[in-house]
Image 1 (cartoon, rainbow, N blue to C red):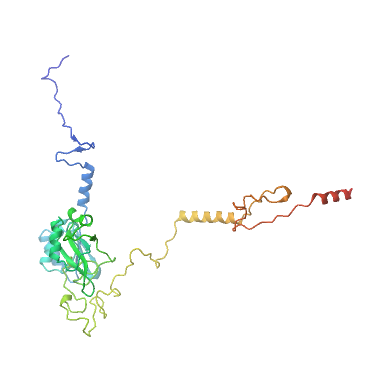
Image 2 (cartoon, rainbow, N blue to C red):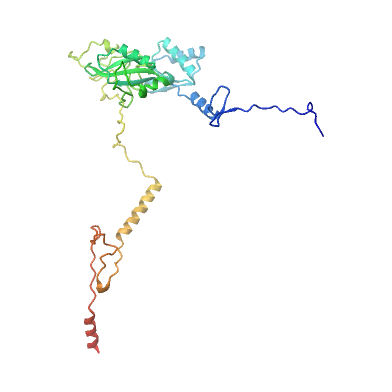
Length: 356
């Protein structure tokens, strides 16, 4: 039975996706990623860690919560933390930005942390002479394709400049290449780029002198590091030449607020050193059984007497027995064993003839 062309069913033909040389299917936009990779990257971007806002003691949380409800700032929850503070948790970046703007506009004392995309990259460039101007260094780095925000000269404790500068860049792919691609600065070669050294442990805020956050994201009242007067440290009249002793704003004792021996300072162990004061953890059950079995076998092998070497003719021990090394002398760990010599055969014959 023949079917006419007009009556034949027309099946919808699906267009086959284009295929690259490596065998991966290409989408219309030329994306080579698989659907699994796209889904994983989307989930990773949605699960990015959102920083929290920490309200200081004395904040009117009832008014803040009412204003957030009125302005449709839907934060997830608020919990009480140490020092009578309140931690506000946001579900997404948009809510975090809205709440952060409200707290700053209403002059609420709090501190927070920077978002992942807003964090900066810090690079230390070694080998830059002290007479090089910072503007010339920044213009040269920008001319090489590195988006540098600012450049700072690093100094010693006494204020004398070092042959090192600190470059601050945004967290982009072009900025990350500065660690491997930068070779010349202002026509000077022989430089070295590295990440800044981290002392370890929580950092201290230069604004409020508390630990655990940075001054860039702190919106509390400034406190001096040398005295109890609430002002900026650079405005303090107390100097090293003055006879007045400093006072700590954290504990009230006579030392600066950045003193590591302060009772309010966090105690931490340096990285790379074992903690000898920590009590040893109990061993695993299987590990203890195995070690007990190995110790018992070792004890039995030590207590068991060694086998006697086979004697040769004349009752002498073979010099190449199992208890002698390649030099012919017994090892130091094993004691030399002495065996009684057998009686001579002639004496045995005399005894037998006398009995007859």
